[in-house]
Image 1 (cartoon, rainbow, N blue to C red):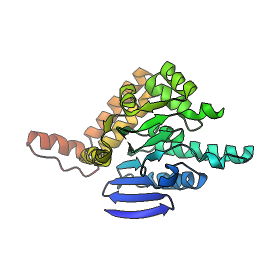
Image 2 (cartoon, one colour; image 1 turned 60 degrees about the vertical axis):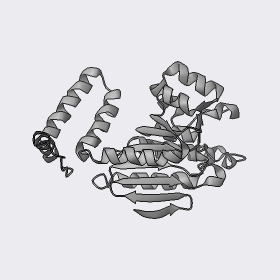
Image 3 (cartoon, rainbow, N blue to C red; image 1 turned 180 degrees about the vertical axis):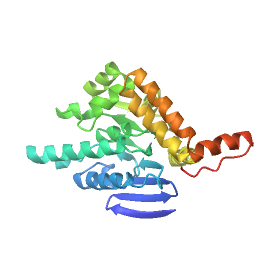
Length: 264
């Protein structure tokens, strides 16, 4: 494992094809300011050119906060231009994460409010600890989410439940987050990162091309008519059958051995 500090508040750990990006701003419960947003965006955009080396990204925080929203102190007294600039940066960063070809796992270690929940909604899989609280409390400030909360949340929990969460600004406990489909599992606090890493390592044993294509086909299919999605599924399956990994997987099954995938 190697570790780098990409920014005062961002730590990157490398575990072969798995990378862990940790927001290290414990004193502010991981609240996002413009500088952190910019640094996350730069790192995430760099991953688009490294899909052959990095297959899985884990996002997590430090201490009691995953991301407790935007740094509200930066809003106070700022002009419209500065506020709009921050929101554009948020949109760019969250979209870059959601559109990554790699699998993204959120290990939500604590409060995930506002932009923190929006960040989690950009992940393919979310693990929470049993004490985690999630929510979109912007309405209590006379505002609404600006990083995808009003759009990504209804696609997961349905429009009625999303409106209730948005309009009340209430906190969602870990067990409810799992029940609603916002999170995959709730873990004991000290088991969160080991479980997220265990899950990532299990995915890393799969054929890399098939892994990335599984994500793409599901995500693209959600925005397509069913018939178009089914056609895409068949096309991708045919292309995977022609890959070296596809042939290796079938051969290994017939020979009753573990496959050796090479990502091609």
